[in-house]
Length: 566
Image (cartoon, rainbow, N blue to C red; front, top):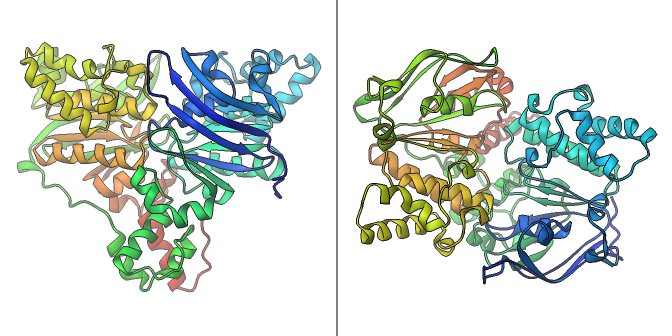
């Protein structure tokens, strides 16, 4: 699409925002424009104010929170404050990280109708507009479905359909793939690309993982940790000239760029510019097959301590409302082992983790923890040895400040105040939250909340950690720091069971992978063997990690096959 750069559709000038009672602004003097038909990536480290900016752009902030906005935002030359309540949402639509947070009805059809009715759509037009929006996101067969029966990917597509039904001029996507399995994530990005090619809206995308978005974006706007604009320019210039600066800020780079950067340092990449695609990367590698070994970032596999099994699931079945959510699942976790649980949205991963944590009792089967049935453990003794980090961090916050959240369990143990202070300070430093010590946990960004939830259990030094998607919403630096903390736990003899959609984590860290599909275990083994099982990968909506994809692409080129890059 030819972009119309002669006139902006949205403009911010000296935009700053801070929460009430917080001196430091989240956003500081942000100034940029969005043009008709343009697709822009909004990048920045965790906590840099990306979501806050998105909420300011369609008047959710400061109307929905206690905060102060300075500067101006204009849409088609009209100041945002001149629009009535809810009026701007017809023109600037936003899809949140968590789609369920924006649903208010029980069925797919009613959810779409709700928005259309609020915008005073003529009743005789509502039915056709609902069908049109659902068709756009490939959800028409689910028109009469209950929303709670949809998968995570389908819910995200429904949230997108609700926004598209209003035919907005600007579509804002706030980490739309963060909660999705790899296949659903890729499908959503392709739907957005298809829509972008056929409709005339502008697009602002907030994302950490960039590979599937690069080919449809025209420009990048980058925020630093202080909420200021670090860069505003073309996608090619952003990743060719500023890759090192972005890495320093903790911003994820596209995989090809990251590989090219490492390749330059190691002397194996000879291209003049950093690659934006696999094709460009492979073309610039002096010896592609040798390069694979250098680019492989896998950690050394852990040596399980004396092969001691500390947790054992035996024929677990869990039934809810007459339906088996899990069926006959058996596996074990050894001391000093990193076990990853993977699978498509709705496959039963979170349900399994809650059984393993003793939060749900199994309908059938048994769970042994250090050779004793989980049901026989006293709650206090169990929590001293086993910790669980929820998928939604808010579910476990109980204190009024970040500092007190981490200190809470230490105070219960009657540890001296001086030791508590030392431990909490060290934990805050490890998860890059020292500057947030006095803030309320609910005021943090999603990525910061995740890190706080992990820090609050790590200080107790339990022997088994169960974590549900702890790296969701993390920037490159904080994700790496979290994984270092878990590695340290394992090296000291602890064990980790982690649910994740991140195939790079499986590739780099996992000793063993458990794959679920529709409540059943379909794989239990090494990551390397999993990548070769095409049928299981397809059923579980998984994608091979980047290095394996690169290996396959290089092999295809060597065999003279036409390379189809996805």
